[in-house]
Image (cartoon, rainbow, N blue to C red; front, side):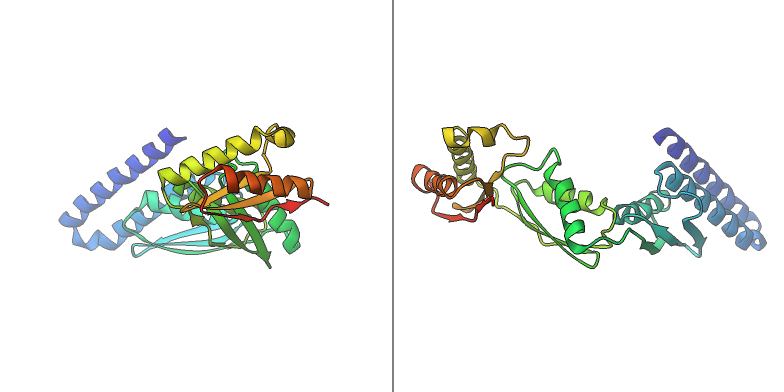
Length: 256
C-alpha cells in the first residue's frame, strides 16, 4: 500500500513540474494547468482514503481548489475523521484543509458508550497497573480523565478511544505523571509487595490485575476493585507502611 501511495505522489509531482514549465512558456494556460493539478491532487487523496478504508462508496467528497482541500461527508468514527485530514495533508502539505466531515455513529446510552471506550482501553496492551483511566460520556461527547505514567500512553489512549463507534467528540483530561526515579521505586515496590501477598495471588493471575497504583511525587492513589474490605485495607497498609510513600489515598472499591 505504501509503495502505491508513494508512486501516486511521485506522479503528482511530475505533473506539477510539467505544469510549471508550461505556465512559464504559455501564461494563458495557467488556469487550465491549475485545474489539472487540483484534479491530480484530488485523485491521490481519494486513492489514499480508499486504501485506508476511510472512503467507502461515496461517503466522502473531496474538492481541491485555490490551494484549499475541502472534505465533506460522514464517517463512523472520530478516528476516521482525523485520519482523513492526515491523508490529505500527506498529499499536499502546503494546502489549507477544510474538514466538514461529520461522525454518524450508532446511538448508544451514555453508560454503554463509556463502557465500550473503557473496555477498549483496559484491554489495550499498553494499559498497565500504573495507569488509571476514567471515562465519562454525555450525548456522544466522551471525556477521558485519570493518569498515565508514560507520556505517549496519553496519545495512544486518546487515539484508541476515537476508534469506538459512537464517540462524536473527545475531551482529553488525562494527566501525565511526573518522571521521577523515586516514584518509580515506590510504584515497583508497591506492586511487588501487593501482588506477591497471598491475599492477592489470584489478582496477580488476571490478564488485567485489578489494583492500580498511581504515584504522583511520592503520593500514592490506589484505584480498582477488590473482593472484600479486608483486601482493601490490606493493600492500603502495605503501601502505607512498607514503602516510602508520603501519603496513601485508598480509592479501591469493594465488589458487591
